[in-house]
Length: 110
Figure 1: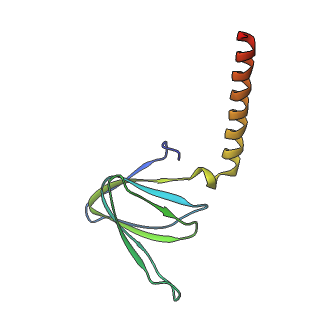
Figure 2 (figure 1 turned 60 degrees about the vertical axis):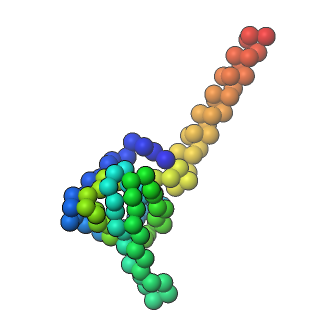
């Protein structure tokens, strides 16, 4: 997960409603407590979840959520690496290059 993403703050009584995406996200509570509601549909009832500091919840792309601080909270919406194929490809290239450099260093030392 990218830890560099913005820290959101909700004060007492504040609420946010938003749609997740593009791609999945992870909501991670840094401090305080959040009340999260995912509206239901005819096939599935709405879901309420309480999250404390240190807890997280995976949110599917396209899902609608409403969150409220209880009484206040700081949180992040993180993008899982699996949601970024281009990033995964770059990381794979960097790992391969690092392994090659390490192998060359071992050969030079021998």
